Length: 162
Image (cartoon, rainbow, N blue to C red; front, side):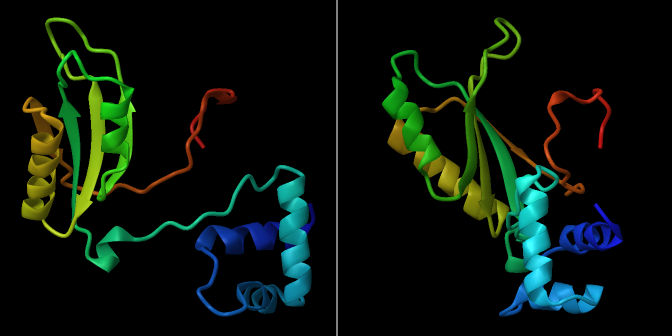
């Protein structure tokens, strides 16, 4: 890596510009042609320096202000198909299973819901509960958004946070 690569990484961390030719804009900021900015990005990706480039939508700017984790205690007779219906429901971004803590926390299915209001999210959760035949659930709304950072697996970076 050279100083231009370091500058390129800094620009990419700010976000890819939402213009018709984003690498031309990044290149302009770095004093290099857009084709070179794109070629350097590809090289850094191929070398594993950049793992992925992905979009992250600022939910609040598009009107999504209500976010909730829902913990479900589904009926024992549920099968994999019943669980997969949750994952494909609109407004749900995450859906996963966890082991219960017998006698303390019996919830095993967790979904993350997003909407424009708490009422909208609650209506959607109630509809899903009715359709799925699962009446035991707990809705936990988030109250604050924290800075999102890339996922770090335990053991990477010596276990330190990025």
